[in-house]
Amino acid sequence: MRCVLCKATHFSVVHRFRKCTRCNLVQVVPMPGAEAIAAFYREDLKHFDPYIAQRAVHRAYFRKKMQEIKKLASPSTLLDIGCAMGILLEEAKRAGVNAFGVDISRDAVTFCRRKGLTASQTYPKRRFDVVTAFEVIEHERDPVGFMRRVYKLLNKGGVVVLTTPDHSGIWQKLMGRHWVSYQHPEHVTFWENESLRYLLTKSGFSNITVRRDSPRPFPLSFLFTRAADYFPWAAWILKPIGRVLARRRIVNPINPWDDLLVVGKK
Image 1 (cartoon, rainbow, N blue to C red):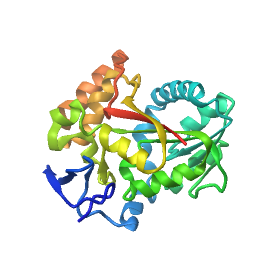
Image 2: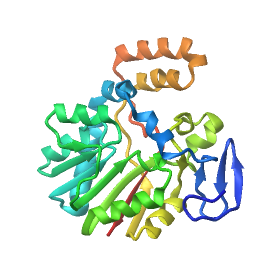
Image 3: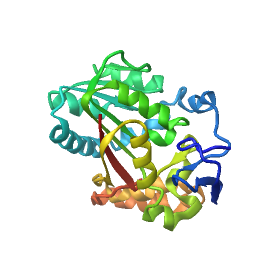
């Protein structure tokens, strides 16, 4: 058994996972094969139902991200890896940026194309000023290979922007083995500041920054209705509370996945 990031062979146990004692990456052991991971994304439009239901929240978030990205790079082209329902692509287009989306999910790509967006299941044979990957790296069984591909997809001086749940964050400490990011079977790696910096440095990036991501303006009811999905044994009380709060339309800006935001330059 080797760490998929630094190739070390010494680990500590974290719940049902293993943490590398050299670079602090936490990973699934044994690591599933590429075909097993790809199987999660076949005929999976229903997987996006919670995302679609809260698209106004995500639109506000990605509009803010595009403002931040334009300050970082003044891009004319952008590639969004893991484009899902294409909300970032729409906001990039609105900001005057030529955007292209990639997603392993055929349903996600079809959804984007029906909205007139440019999306594919395969990577384009061109380079971009910015490459984004929101909530993607935790799905990658070969994170170094993934980031080296991102590096090649960038123009010289280009910028990568990614987010991922923080394994060293307060929510992981409070929730332990019930932490939200652990509940996704397609999540195979778990990251923190040190391991993310190591990943980008090893992949060739410089000017690396890692910080807490900004919140998304979720309604307070979202906390309870989404929690019912992760903790079905408590759904009998969580869902009714969510329905009551939904009628009150109280907004509670949160970073629900305790995300870190990472920026690196080619």
